[in-house]
Image (cartoon, rainbow, N blue to C red; front, side):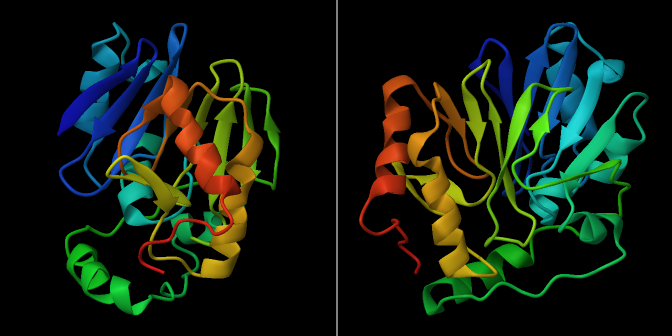
Length: 237
């Protein structure tokens, strides 16, 4: 487990698996984007305490999609005093455990990688979802905008916080060796590529990926360049 300061009010929490979560401080409160794998309550508590906050300071957990490396600790955090869990309406039934999703349509290059990764991620316990988000919704309570980015899952979203100029891409995009590419393991690769194009003209100073290192300042142009390229970079496609 590791806590990394991306900037003064933004922390990345790395779990013991492939997942990562992001804490965004808003005064005396905080918003969490994704949770990492199951069992991350302790390290998220530590990250809050590093700011002089506690569990009661966490008001929202917003999930970019249902996969267990992103929503694994949602049920644990939903039991905290003030937490409200939000997710897109298409993924909410899966997070609640009342529905199931199809497996991703793997390319040949992804098959071995997926077989290795899938066996290392614990299942996510069903979690309540307090609010089902719609396509491109404005979230006034947290001053954010939902960007619907289906393809990785049916209910994948990105989140744009314009006041902080921060974008959370979820798994539609990933940072890999200093490059920005399409994330792997998609339900619909063509749709995922179309969703990736949505990042072409967003005004940001920081971009945080579901996997890989965040980018800040001028390096965020890597996302824009990838989103406007003739072909979306897709090394496993």
